Length: 91
Image (cartoon, rainbow, N blue to C red; front, side, top):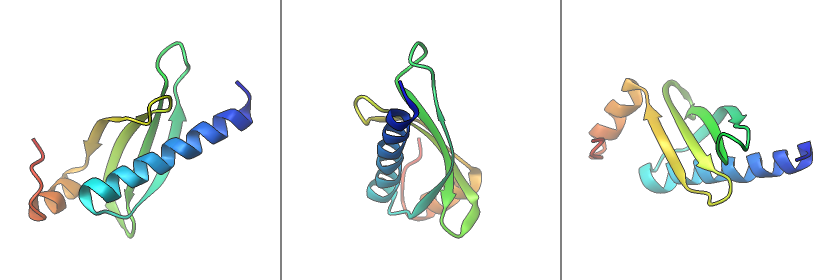
């Protein structure tokens, strides 16, 4: 796969991750790190990010670039507190 294809896959998956955070939790987030796994491991791109303007409210999320499904969602304790306060069940 060439880098243009990778860039397109990453861009689409990044948009999926940002949309997921907005749609599910009403959060505006920014992505600060991305890593595309080798295809022999998984069709997945891992992202790290934070709520805009809140560097301590961080999250990790993976997006399958073939299906655009999200998985492996991990959040910081600071972000968990905010989401619990908003009424989200984090279990």
